[in-house]
Amino acid sequence: MFHFDVITQNWPLFWAGLQVTLFYSAISISAGLVIGLVVGLIQLTGSRTLTIIGRVYVEIFRNIPLLVILLWIYYAFPIFAGLSITKFWAGFAGLSLYAGAFYAEILRAGVQSIDRGQTDASTALGMTYGQRMRRVILPQAFRRMIPPLAGQSIIQIKNTTLMSMITVPDLLYQASYVSSFTYRPMEVYTMVGAMFLVLLVPLTLLSRRLEKVSERVK
Amino acid sequence: MSVHPNPGPAAGPLLKVEALRLKFGTREVLKGVDLTVRKGEVVVLIGASGSGKTSLLRCVNLLNLPSHGKITIGGEAIYSANPAARDGNGVPLATVNRIRAQTGMVFQQFNLFPHMTALENVMEGPVTVKKANRDATRREALDLLAQMGLADHVGKYPRQLSGGQQQRVAIARAMAMHPQVMLFDEPTSALDPELVGEVMKAMLDLARSGMTMLIVTHELGFAFEIADRVIFLDEGQIVEDGPPRDVLLRPTHPRLKSFVGRFHETADLLRPFLEGS
Ligand SMILES: Nc1ncnc2c1ncn2[C@@H]1O[C@H](COP(=O)(O)OP(=O)(O)OP(=O)(O)O)[C@@H](O)[C@H]1O
Ligand SMILES: [Mg+2]
Image (tube, rainbow over all chains, first blue to last red; front, side, top):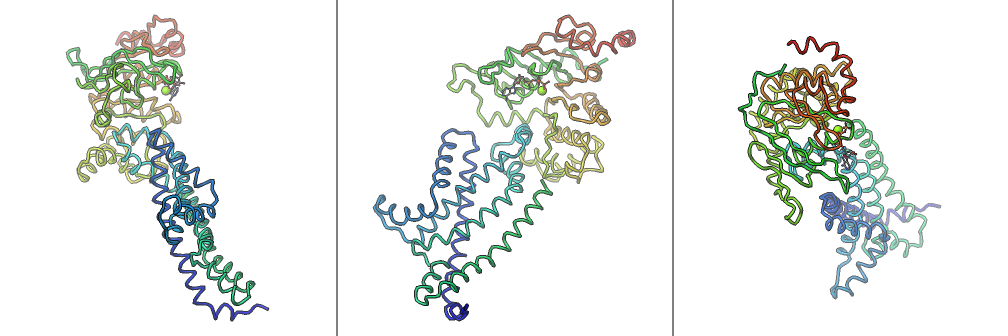
């Protein structure tokens, strides 16, 4: 028997959790995009040092599981650094740095997919590196990057659930809490899954639509 | 048979290339090229595939950085490789970008900006690089496009234009920067045969207007018509340099002889007419 009242009676907790999930999704996607833009671009300047710095960052955060990153930032980093860190900052930093690494790769691939002739033509007009990027390369690259960026952002929203492991009160954390005193894991976790579906299916459909549009503009 | 009235020997050198060398890795593709182009002169560069024509053109606007030599445009040294300098060549980036804007380049593959209309493509250089006034630039761009026979296509995107139309937009885009010299790298090679003529005509008009031009082409008939001088490049070196009738009709170098062979079959028939003109 599915007891809906388990959900309705504890709805304020689910609602609070959902808000935390959405909040962290929004800020970590935004910060991740900024990091990705910077890290992606410094790898394209042609400077060896900057490229290596970018690569090291990307490989570290792409190859360590996000859960390990979050636990490390929250529990290990304070010991190394000799300072304390709130769960807000640990969750925010972990998610953003992780997202930034993937966004940087998407950006780099997007920019590198643009024909060399575009760089030649804009350089021949006398454009600086910044002008070339801003006026010619990035506007074309962004169109191609929309589908992978949307896909990565959807993954990012799902990944926020890992913050429950460092006790950030997101949707999953609140659900575990409700489950711990109602002893109704079936209702509770089914609800969590349903909420993510309602949230993400429209986004997935939207990203597929964008993919078609970006194919058309090419 | 020169297209434009008289460049005249009095006109000073506009473009001067001295002892130019270019290396890709350990491979040297330009092995000491000397070249002078006077103001208003049209010079055609021919040579076998891989002989270094594109590389030479790309050195003139520093898309390729030479490993040795000196390039001067309008009396200003734009590149002077100094082996003593720590980086091996010493041109400040700011100078490079300013100088590049003095040469206009037209590419084989057009390389128009696909996210901009024809008009926006032509306006992009002056507005972004020279910070020119938008309205004045727009008027001039419309004018240039009209000269190229594209008055009806200014609002179209490159993908909506034929190859010939795209290449003419590319010529207008380069001209909008008021370059001192125009560089063309096989501008008709990527075109369907029936579209080649319209681009050649646009280039002939440009030459007649007194534009200084350096053109790479495999169209020897076109070279004969447009060039004041033809240069034959072989394995990174200039082996022949002279008026088209000498280089194309009376080649001395054995490689050049075989290179222009296919042209000769028709040229032989025409020789009496060509020489009599
Ligand atoms: N970026 C590069 N890196 C390495 N080698 C290059 C590069 N560009 C050109 N080359 C080599 O330099 C040589 C000269 O090339 P270039 O493109 O200047 O010849 P080309 O005369 O223009 O030939 P084509 O008629 O085929 O266009 C070729 O052997 C080519 O393989
Ligand atoms: Mg070439």
